Length: 238
Length: 76
Image 1 (spheres, rainbow over the protein chains, first blue to last red):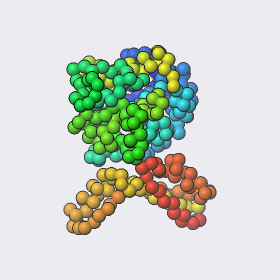
Image 2 (tube, one colour):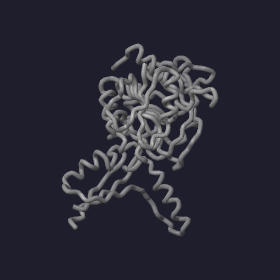
Image 3 (spheres, each protein chain N blue to C red):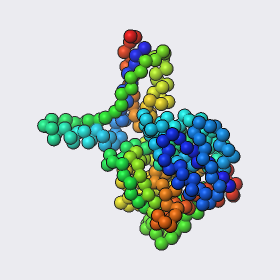
Image 4 (cartoon, each protein chain N blue to C red):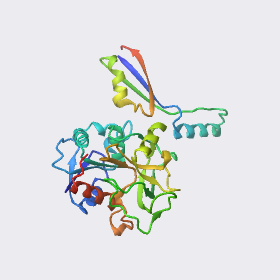
């Protein structure tokens, strides 16, 4: 199984994403100026400041030739993960609903956040297991995993119109929420990660690729990549 | 054709930049200022003013969270 990791001018987390993906499969960097996805089974749009984040974060990157290929790949059911700037790019490209706005605190913020896994039956979360850290969600069946991974951004406030937010919740597209006390950017309804309606495109602001090595403490981010591998291997193509 | 595009955060969406500016003004002695919002200004020369709307929808603004207003400034 092979991951393709996009690299734009201004990307800065593509190497960590590549290394994280290599813990669960093969992975290769894909240059933004090329349309060829080189046979990748899943795509990661990494974090950073693509094209300098000019105009709006992700606004220009969405027109890169590689993104045109990724949009086509997503339309035919391919798995696409957007992390941080990658999430912004996927929203700008219309592959995911909503938009990311400047943090409510107006600061670039870098901190460890805790995330409640809302669903454990998706292509991006199926390998997440409740460990010692469990969400205390009342009224849910069984324990839900709570992931500890870093977030670092200044444009991470998830926004969508109220009706869209209702629809996302009804359809189960909210896969991750900031745990109580961890929504530092002011995201509406504590949304930390959303998928498209088909479930094959997913974006989140925090960085699972920075939480895969015991050397840097938490390895909770690994389950996102493991989930994608399971989805590819079981042939779940939407 | 010279054109100017004004881009504003949509009404009702939290605008922390506007709030920060609004909080800063009283400290300089400007009292009573309300409803401050911060947006963007894009000025451009275009061969066909009829394309401005599409430029705004596709790139210059994000219509989900921003309103835009096109002003035509004439030739030369």
